[in-house]
Amino acid sequence: MFKSFRLQLTAWYLGCFLLLLGCFSGFLYALLARNLRERLDASLADEAVTAAGLFRAELGEHSGALVPAAVEALDELRLPAASLAIFAGGKMLAANRPADFPGQRVSLLLGSGRVYRTWPEPGRHGARVLVLPFRAGSAACHLAALEPLDSMAEQLAALREVFYLGLPLALVLAGAGGYLLAAKSLAPVAAMAKQAEGITARNLDRRLEVRRASAELGRLAAAFNELLSRLERSFASMREFVADASHELRTPLSIIRGEADVALSQDRRPAEYRESLAIIQDEARRLSRLVDDLLSLAQADAGHRPLHLEDFYLNDLLEDCCRAVQPLARQKSIQLAWSYGEDVPFHGDQELLRRMTMNLLDNAIRYTPAGGRVELNLDTEGGLARIRVSDTGIGIPPDSLERIFERFYRVDKARSRAVGGFGLGLAIVKWIAESHQGSAHAESAPGAGSTFTVRLPLSGARIHPRFILDSIQ
Image 1 (cartoon, rainbow, N blue to C red):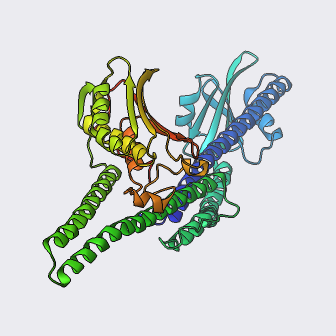
Image 2: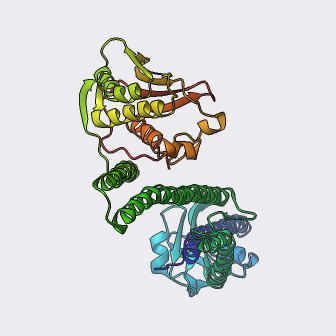
């Protein structure tokens, strides 16, 4: 009904307040009515006992004459509100107000012992009646005491008027107080919403500031600020990714366009055309490899690259990879060695693991000078398969080790571009390792070579077929 949370909170507060106040008022009214009735009954009992005592005393003075004794006793006991009557043998001996004791009603009460009844008459609201049986000498007598309920009804009516007037006023005051309390409680939320409305992709460095907030709202603000921090990092990574990708794509495209312009500017010999086409072919291959890498990472981010799981021997896969890069290592006069123990059965995506291994070996060969050594080892420990690729290359500075698995990150950008690297190979290595619930780690020192270690769980099964990579964002 109410779209405003402030009004909803106020309505809930008023509903609870009305329920509690209504229950308290009803309890108070019932308790007061009971106490008034008990006090009236106690007063009637005292008056009846007193009148019975006087009647016994007067009976002795009047030598056992019942009627004169009854008349004298009631004359001496003057009560402003109560009506008294003394009966003997079913007949009324005397009464201070005879009209309040019609015979047909009194006859229903006599002989039934001490009893309280409420009569519809006399009075506008009826009357409370007490019949007290007692003995006076040898006579069995009854004393009836009656008092109208008008006084008690007036007190209860006055209390109801207080409720009728006080409850609406209390609800109005409670509603106003609840609305102000809700407004004050929600003021930090409104301030947070206003600040959040001013945050766009251009000013993600801004944070929410909440003063004098409760613990819950402070926690909400902290969580939102942490969300902004993650968004800021993601946007920064995205901008850097776009800039780096654009830069990497621009260089080969410029070379291709330049060679094509030169080749088409005038007639040339076939050898010159073949030279230009060879350059264009090399740059097209670099572009194709870059696009493939970008597509793989984009699919990983979007979760659109399912794992094609199958059973195979991990050592056979690594041996195939080493044989595939053997010509490249021989061309650079680099010694390539590999070793493994017994067969290591594995359950995973063979194509992705082959690509991961080829990236590690290609990286090691690229950055190892002639005469160096690249070694691949496979062993198992603690339910994990450990793949280590070591080289005697140029090494990595300590401040770059933490960022070496980031996209497009290169320690020496000029040198990396010269050897044909894009800075995406290690990012893909990390993605493939983590998609198999594993990890990738690098150890290196400048001039002392590098060692890249990939750990993969041998449990194999239970690999989720649609792994989404978050850690390389």
